[in-house]
Image (tube, rainbow, N blue to C red; front, side, top):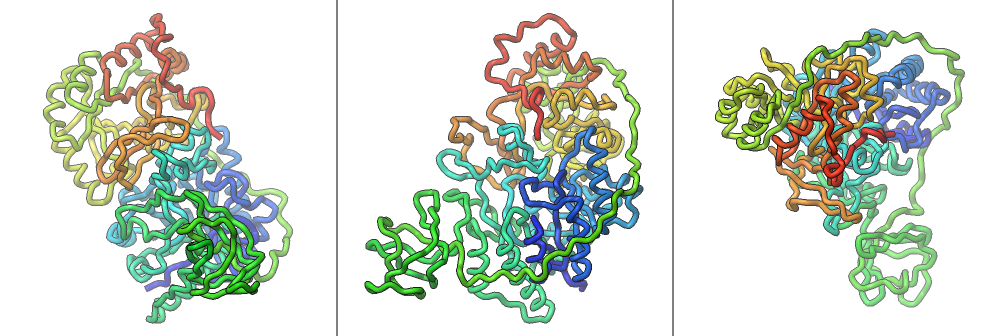
Length: 635
């Protein structure tokens, strides 16, 4: 068995040194643009060459994250940065968009390509041709990891922060806050209060205790999340996982409670072993780092369960928050002491309420081992020329068509009677065939889940073949490999963002909801669908939520909808472009999508009138709707 690689985050030069000098086989880092952690320190064109040279001289591989969605006008800058990484001898690039693979292969021979967890790969059918490694979705079971790892080189997360939504399938920060997680600018709405609790706040992943089971899945790489975290965090996690991995291959795997405590001290939001071993991964009480629990206050005094020294950092819980300070005085049995041990009762902070927990957040004993500094080396003044495909205008010569999603038989029939051109219906509903037979005028398409396992891909294919619809609205990339003979539309879960994407996938995509009007109409290929009315899916998650609505501290209500193996969180407001939809039609866009559970026939008629350029007073309709990113776009 080939030894699993330990991959550590390098958010800046100090973190890179901490990783390299504490056991990393490889590090991953971002540049100053196009990476999913834009707020990290990151690297630039000047210090990237030095960083990679430093790593290679110590037999450590370097993977450069260029794993965001890219607009048409940014493509040249994006691939130029990739050329910089290639010139600097990066071992691999990490990408979100699988349509970039042929361009990378052509321009950068020998450069390995890793598909980011942002691509939400949950089955082997979704693995694109030409990829060297897939970073799997963090929601997979042990068996699913094992099955995919038999067919392709895989990378799995073993430690660090978790997203509430499937990565790459989250529009919450983008739509509700104007900062796109798909563009590296997530505002972390999952760490905020809903229904007076932190219902979406995930614990931190820690798979140290289950490392043998993870290694035995056949995964090639064990990855630590944390490009936003400190060198101390990187050093601590690196050294502990390094020893554990080496011990496993020596046949003497073990871990200690002391190691778990060290990991907690480095950073934790309470630990979980993730969906591989649990059904829930959230802690609704606190959304922030806790540190290491060291005791509770009783009678105004702290009863220690861990040692404490002058100079240590301590956080005291106050409700759902933790107030931190540096320990300057410890009183034990009436005397000032420099340190105290587990079991001691000390006076530490006046005014502490009984039952309030205390946490150690830093230790004076901690010593950073960063090794040598990174020497600067001379960088080339230019990089090789890149051939990016150029696209001619590709107009849509069809007539204006309206595509409607129906959630029940009555809605499907009424949409058909309202002259919808296509009716989408859930392939998983038992009455799907019956509804197909009731739709007399429109084309009948089925729509599929966005998240599917290998087994579910084949089950869905069989269901589609049994129904034999006119076409399929595809929610998951994996279905593209098994569906033949059907007209295909692609859900906006595909994140189609540029002309490369539009000329890559087979099928007509619903264009990304993160593009503004100018982004959309500037696309040369006009053969795509625009969502003009209805619900916006903000999150697709494996975590099952009990409340039917999430109410944030601003009073916004986000509806929760149950789906197969999880739930969807919908935006507070539906999108309703009304007369603005005609602006798209004037620019040669012909396909329009309506996704609402009520009055679908009325909205189909309204938009037919608007798109026929008939006069329509939408003044009384616009209230309560959003125009999404039509005007504002995303960072």
